[in-house]
Image (cartoon, rainbow, N blue to C red; front, side):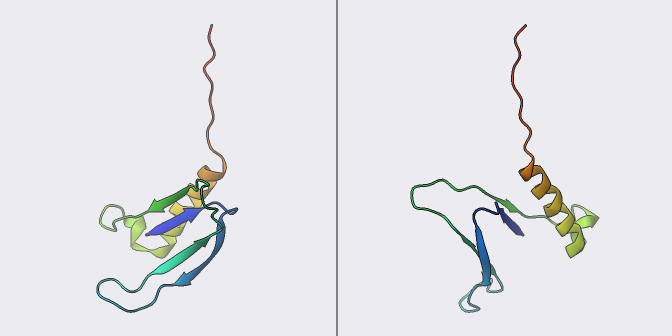
Length: 82
Protein backbone atom coordinates (compact mmCIF):
# COMPACT_ATOMS: atom_id res chain seq x y z
CA UNK A 1 0.00 0.00 0.00
CA UNK A 2 1.11 3.54 -0.62
CA UNK A 3 -0.04 7.06 0.07
CA UNK A 4 1.01 10.02 -2.05
CA UNK A 5 0.69 13.72 -1.23
CA UNK A 6 2.08 16.78 -2.96
CA UNK A 7 5.50 18.05 -1.92
CA UNK A 8 3.88 21.22 -0.56
CA UNK A 9 1.94 19.16 2.00
CA UNK A 10 4.55 16.55 2.89
CA UNK A 11 6.05 17.08 6.37
CA UNK A 12 7.56 13.65 7.05
CA UNK A 13 6.78 10.07 8.01
CA UNK A 14 6.97 8.03 11.19
CA UNK A 15 6.23 4.53 12.41
CA UNK A 16 2.94 3.99 14.17
CA UNK A 17 3.10 2.42 17.64
CA UNK A 18 3.41 -1.37 17.48
CA UNK A 19 0.68 -2.11 19.99
CA UNK A 20 -2.93 -3.22 20.00
CA UNK A 21 -4.89 -5.79 18.05
CA UNK A 22 -4.73 -6.35 14.31
CA UNK A 23 -2.15 -4.93 11.94
CA UNK A 24 0.51 -3.07 13.91
CA UNK A 25 3.37 -2.77 11.39
CA UNK A 26 2.24 0.55 9.91
CA UNK A 27 3.51 4.04 9.19
CA UNK A 28 2.08 7.56 9.39
CA UNK A 29 2.47 10.45 7.01
CA UNK A 30 2.64 13.99 8.36
CA UNK A 31 1.11 16.80 6.33
CA UNK A 32 1.23 20.57 6.64
CA UNK A 33 -2.56 20.77 6.53
CA UNK A 34 -4.50 23.85 7.57
CA UNK A 35 -7.92 23.56 9.23
CA UNK A 36 -10.65 24.43 6.76
CA UNK A 37 -8.37 24.09 3.71
CA UNK A 38 -8.89 21.12 1.39
CA UNK A 39 -6.02 18.68 0.91
CA UNK A 40 -5.56 16.11 -1.84
CA UNK A 41 -3.88 12.74 -1.58
CA UNK A 42 -3.90 9.43 -3.40
CA UNK A 43 -3.99 5.99 -1.87
CA UNK A 44 -2.55 3.01 -3.76
CA UNK A 45 -2.96 -0.68 -3.14
CA UNK A 46 -2.10 -3.63 -5.37
CA UNK A 47 -2.52 -7.37 -5.24
CA UNK A 48 0.53 -9.45 -6.19
CA UNK A 49 -1.60 -12.10 -7.89
CA UNK A 50 -3.03 -9.50 -10.25
CA UNK A 51 0.28 -8.54 -11.85
CA UNK A 52 3.81 -9.94 -11.51
CA UNK A 53 5.17 -6.39 -11.13
CA UNK A 54 3.58 -6.20 -7.68
CA UNK A 55 5.62 -9.14 -6.37
CA UNK A 56 8.60 -6.86 -5.73
CA UNK A 57 9.13 -3.53 -4.00
CA UNK A 58 10.80 -2.26 -7.17
CA UNK A 59 7.65 -2.92 -9.21
CA UNK A 60 5.52 -0.99 -6.74
CA UNK A 61 8.10 1.83 -6.67
CA UNK A 62 7.87 2.08 -10.47
CA UNK A 63 4.09 2.37 -10.23
CA UNK A 64 4.37 5.17 -7.68
CA UNK A 65 7.02 6.98 -9.74
CA UNK A 66 4.77 6.87 -12.81
CA UNK A 67 1.80 8.09 -10.80
CA UNK A 68 3.87 10.93 -9.29
CA UNK A 69 4.85 12.04 -12.80
CA UNK A 70 1.20 12.02 -13.88
CA UNK A 71 0.19 13.90 -10.73
CA UNK A 72 2.85 16.55 -11.40
CA UNK A 73 1.76 16.96 -15.04
CA UNK A 74 -2.03 16.73 -15.15
CA UNK A 75 -3.82 16.68 -18.47
CA UNK A 76 -5.88 19.77 -19.23
CA UNK A 77 -8.30 20.34 -22.04
CA UNK A 78 -10.84 22.80 -23.31
CA UNK A 79 -13.79 22.58 -25.63
CA UNK A 80 -13.37 24.53 -28.84
CA UNK A 81 -16.62 25.37 -30.53
CA UNK A 82 -16.71 25.65 -34.30
